[in-house]
Amino acid sequence: MSAALRVDIVTTFPDMVRGAASHSILARAQTAGLLDLHVHDLRDYAEGRHRITDDYPFGGGAGMVMKPEPLFAAVEAILGEASETPVLFPAPDGEPFTQAIAHELAGAGRFVILCGHYEGVDERVREAVVTRELSMGDYVLTGGELPALVILDAVTRLLPGVLGNEASPHEESFGADGLLEYPHYTRPASFQGHDVPPILLSGHHANITKWRRQQALARTRTRRPDLWAKLLPLSKADQKLLDAHDAEQQQES
Ligand SMILES: C[S@@+](CC[C@H](N)C(=O)[O-])C[C@H]1O[C@@H](n2cnc3c(N)ncnc32)[C@H](O)[C@@H]1O
Image (cartoon, rainbow, N blue to C red; front, side, top):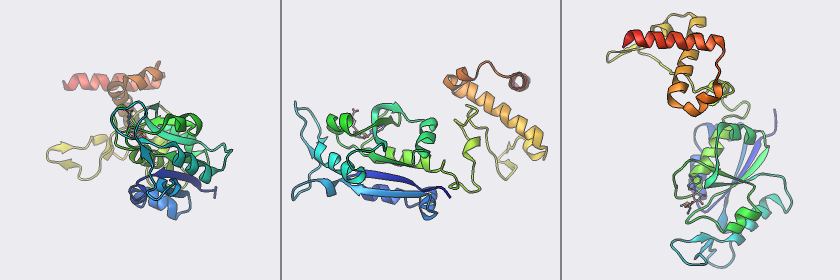
């Protein structure tokens, strides 16, 4: 078995991170020795009786800023002075977090996540300590804990052996084929007048595979024109599937 992925998360809300990481896949990955998670309370690296981690912004303005000293000290204690280990900082103005980055991090062996709060962290931390800034999307969250958990979850489920017989990450949205995933159905076959597509009940595996590909193509075209543009031109087989889908839709309308 390959070595566990080691992730260190530095936060002022360690219980929030530990709590979320003690359920479902994150808990199982730790129990199975595939994820080695260390959650650090930033206050342990703050000086003084009150262990203060934030201060007023130079230049004035609303809100507080996280002080540089505890964050520098935490990373130094965790990694030592010179390290190649990625130090991630979730930030609304960072690079958009994607499945491709999750794959990269799953192969990194180790990384650290620093959780910001208030107005954010002193810029010197971003300049001197952080190696990559990742955004969860164009909205502002209260702190970096939820983004850290999002990153941790997306990465952990890609580690070999973590998912067991659950969904394979290769067949999901944003996988190697660049498509969104096809729709799923389970029992009952008919529910409140809504029927499962008959092909899924046919037992004809080749046709089911074709139908799923057709649905994934149509769904990606409609929902994500940005992903769709990268898939063009389609292969002849995919174009045929999509044409058949469009003809069927036209007949229905
Ligand atoms: C209240 S936010 C600070 C927002 C900052 N003042 C701004 O306008 O960009 C506090 C912390 O939450 C995290 N955060 C908030 N929104 C985020 C997002 N969309 N993606 C990643 N991290 C986010 C960051 O670590 C940030 O430093």
